[in-house]
Length: 134
Image (cartoon, rainbow, N blue to C red; front, side, top):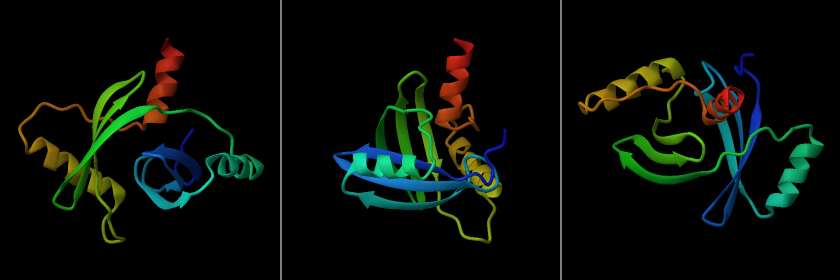
């Protein structure tokens, strides 16, 4: 089932701060329009999401280190049950598609001369696939 156009919500706790994000995939499941804000009470926000009809699906537990490479955001993620990933992101305007930006970012990473495997699934999809296979 395609995730394109289907909004989803995320509650993330990081360094004692609770972030609420709504994302809507546009070009593919990794290219999303996002709206994010800090919330004071995680449990109340969770309850509000459930009341609005959102259903908890998967919990992603990871350790993350972040950095910048010019205009690019870099994240080194150690994801429980999956392994270690480098996530490369850039904010884009309406003049560039998500797919084009992803190709550009892939080229930047490959320009470093290191061997990489590009993953086009999100962590939640990878975790579901791993659980189904195991």
